[in-house]
Length: 147
Image 1: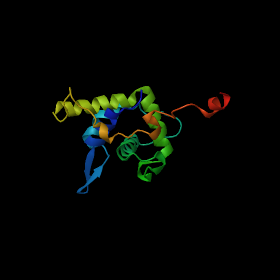
Image 2 (image 1 turned 180 degrees about the vertical axis):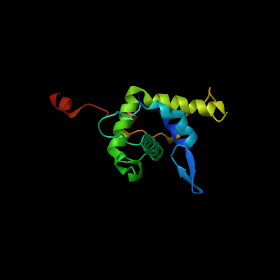
Image 3 (image 1 turned 90 degrees about the horizontal axis):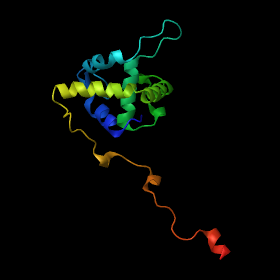
Image 4 (image 1 turned 30 degrees about the vertical axis):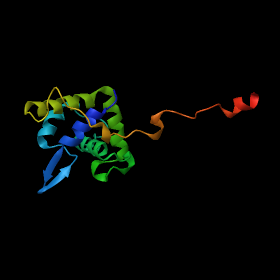
Protein backbone atom coordinates (compact mmCIF):
# COMPACT_ATOMS: atom_id res chain seq x y z
CA UNK A 1 0.00 0.00 0.00
CA UNK A 2 1.61 3.20 -1.15
CA UNK A 3 0.56 6.54 0.27
CA UNK A 4 -1.06 8.11 -2.74
CA UNK A 5 -1.68 11.71 -3.64
CA UNK A 6 -5.10 11.71 -1.94
CA UNK A 7 -3.54 10.82 1.39
CA UNK A 8 -0.96 13.55 0.97
CA UNK A 9 -3.61 16.08 0.06
CA UNK A 10 -5.81 15.29 3.05
CA UNK A 11 -2.85 15.26 5.43
CA UNK A 12 -1.35 18.42 4.02
CA UNK A 13 -4.30 20.70 3.55
CA UNK A 14 -6.40 20.03 6.63
CA UNK A 15 -3.88 20.28 9.45
CA UNK A 16 -3.23 23.69 10.90
CA UNK A 17 -2.97 24.33 14.62
CA UNK A 18 -2.95 27.53 16.65
CA UNK A 19 -0.14 27.75 19.19
CA UNK A 20 0.47 30.90 21.17
CA UNK A 21 -1.65 32.97 18.77
CA UNK A 22 0.28 31.86 15.68
CA UNK A 23 -0.51 29.17 13.17
CA UNK A 24 1.60 26.04 13.27
CA UNK A 25 1.22 24.23 9.98
CA UNK A 26 1.51 20.49 9.45
CA UNK A 27 0.52 19.54 13.01
CA UNK A 28 -2.48 17.68 14.31
CA UNK A 29 -5.02 19.48 16.43
CA UNK A 30 -6.04 17.93 19.74
CA UNK A 31 -9.34 16.79 18.23
CA UNK A 32 -7.57 15.15 15.30
CA UNK A 33 -5.15 13.40 17.64
CA UNK A 34 -8.01 12.09 19.79
CA UNK A 35 -9.58 10.58 16.67
CA UNK A 36 -6.47 8.55 15.82
CA UNK A 37 -4.67 8.03 19.16
CA UNK A 38 -6.04 4.53 19.69
CA UNK A 39 -4.71 3.33 16.31
CA UNK A 40 -1.32 2.84 17.90
CA UNK A 41 -0.78 -0.17 20.15
CA UNK A 42 0.09 0.40 23.81
CA UNK A 43 3.84 0.47 24.50
CA UNK A 44 5.56 -2.76 25.48
CA UNK A 45 6.34 -3.24 29.14
CA UNK A 46 9.97 -4.03 28.44
CA UNK A 47 12.60 -2.40 26.29
CA UNK A 48 13.11 1.16 25.17
CA UNK A 49 10.13 3.49 25.51
CA UNK A 50 8.63 4.33 22.10
CA UNK A 51 8.88 7.74 20.50
CA UNK A 52 5.95 10.10 20.96
CA UNK A 53 3.55 8.98 18.22
CA UNK A 54 1.96 12.41 17.89
CA UNK A 55 5.37 13.94 17.23
CA UNK A 56 6.08 11.23 14.65
CA UNK A 57 2.77 11.90 12.85
CA UNK A 58 3.54 15.63 12.89
CA UNK A 59 6.94 14.86 11.34
CA UNK A 60 5.31 12.79 8.60
CA UNK A 61 2.88 15.63 7.90
CA UNK A 62 5.79 18.06 7.68
CA UNK A 63 7.57 15.88 5.12
CA UNK A 64 4.42 15.31 3.05
CA UNK A 65 3.56 19.02 3.01
CA UNK A 66 6.99 20.41 2.28
CA UNK A 67 8.28 17.67 0.00
CA UNK A 68 11.66 17.93 1.72
CA UNK A 69 14.08 15.03 1.95
CA UNK A 70 13.78 12.97 5.13
CA UNK A 71 17.21 14.15 6.27
CA UNK A 72 15.93 17.75 6.37
CA UNK A 73 13.25 16.96 8.96
CA UNK A 74 13.54 19.48 11.83
CA UNK A 75 14.82 18.05 15.09
CA UNK A 76 11.58 19.08 16.82
CA UNK A 77 9.94 16.00 15.26
CA UNK A 78 12.61 13.57 16.44
CA UNK A 79 15.33 11.75 14.50
CA UNK A 80 14.53 11.55 10.80
CA UNK A 81 15.48 7.86 10.75
CA UNK A 82 12.81 7.05 13.34
CA UNK A 83 10.15 9.08 11.54
CA UNK A 84 11.00 7.47 8.20
CA UNK A 85 11.11 3.96 9.66
CA UNK A 86 7.68 4.31 11.27
CA UNK A 87 6.28 5.95 8.11
CA UNK A 88 7.53 2.97 6.09
CA UNK A 89 6.13 0.41 8.56
CA UNK A 90 2.77 2.16 8.90
CA UNK A 91 2.49 2.50 5.14
CA UNK A 92 3.16 -1.22 4.69
CA UNK A 93 0.83 -2.49 7.42
CA UNK A 94 -2.12 -0.19 6.67
CA UNK A 95 -1.85 2.05 9.73
CA UNK A 96 -1.65 5.18 7.58
CA UNK A 97 -4.73 4.04 5.67
CA UNK A 98 -6.60 3.67 8.97
CA UNK A 99 -5.45 7.13 10.09
CA UNK A 100 -6.62 8.63 6.80
CA UNK A 101 -9.99 6.91 7.05
CA UNK A 102 -10.57 8.20 10.58
CA UNK A 103 -9.49 11.75 9.82
CA UNK A 104 -11.51 11.81 6.62
CA UNK A 105 -14.56 10.60 8.56
CA UNK A 106 -14.14 13.46 11.02
CA UNK A 107 -14.20 16.01 8.21
CA UNK A 108 -17.03 14.31 6.35
CA UNK A 109 -19.15 14.32 9.53
CA UNK A 110 -18.88 18.11 9.88
CA UNK A 111 -19.30 18.72 6.15
CA UNK A 112 -15.82 20.09 5.40
CA UNK A 113 -15.00 17.29 2.95
CA UNK A 114 -17.45 15.79 0.46
CA UNK A 115 -17.42 12.02 0.93
CA UNK A 116 -18.10 11.44 -2.76
CA UNK A 117 -15.70 13.97 -4.23
CA UNK A 118 -12.28 14.74 -2.90
CA UNK A 119 -9.31 14.78 -5.17
CA UNK A 120 -5.89 16.17 -5.97
CA UNK A 121 -4.94 18.90 -8.38
CA UNK A 122 -2.56 17.04 -10.65
CA UNK A 123 -0.63 20.16 -11.53
CA UNK A 124 1.06 20.13 -8.14
CA UNK A 125 2.39 16.58 -8.41
CA UNK A 126 5.82 16.37 -9.93
CA UNK A 127 7.17 13.40 -11.79
CA UNK A 128 10.80 12.57 -12.24
CA UNK A 129 12.34 13.60 -15.54
CA UNK A 130 12.78 9.99 -16.53
CA UNK A 131 9.04 9.34 -16.05
CA UNK A 132 8.31 11.06 -19.36
CA UNK A 133 9.14 7.85 -21.23
CA UNK A 134 10.57 8.04 -24.69
CA UNK A 135 14.18 7.21 -25.09
CA UNK A 136 16.61 7.57 -27.92
CA UNK A 137 15.22 7.31 -31.42
CA UNK A 138 16.89 5.68 -34.36
CA UNK A 139 19.21 2.74 -34.87
CA UNK A 140 21.65 1.95 -32.07
CA UNK A 141 25.30 2.52 -33.05
CA UNK A 142 26.21 -1.14 -32.59
CA UNK A 143 23.67 -2.20 -35.24
CA UNK A 144 24.74 0.54 -37.65
CA UNK A 145 28.31 -0.77 -37.66
CA UNK A 146 27.24 -4.34 -38.43
CA UNK A 147 25.39 -3.41 -41.62
